[in-house]
Length: 102
Image (cartoon, rainbow, N blue to C red; front, side):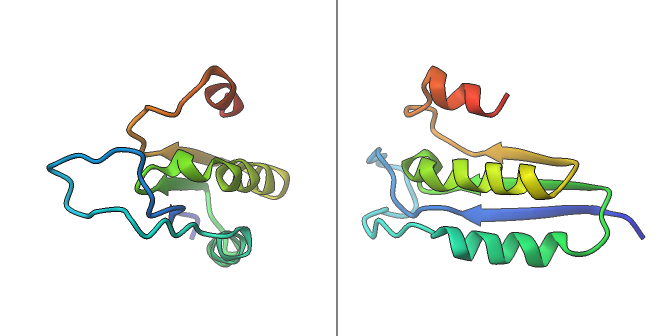
């Protein structure tokens, strides 16, 4: 049976803001590495699927933009019908980073 595969990657625990209402102080600055992301993606997308959705979360996911870019390139080269989504506070988005996802 074909289905929608949803993958959520916590690409960093770091954040560039210090909101008073935030439930977690992001001070650890841990970043996911490419090998971890690839192993998750390959495991989940190895089955038959109709569409895939990969979400990038953080802290602020664009603090680990290098990984996001590598994941998008990796997936785009190997899999079809995968959409990407980033949950961001928007403070680090530039024309160059936004244009990458077009």
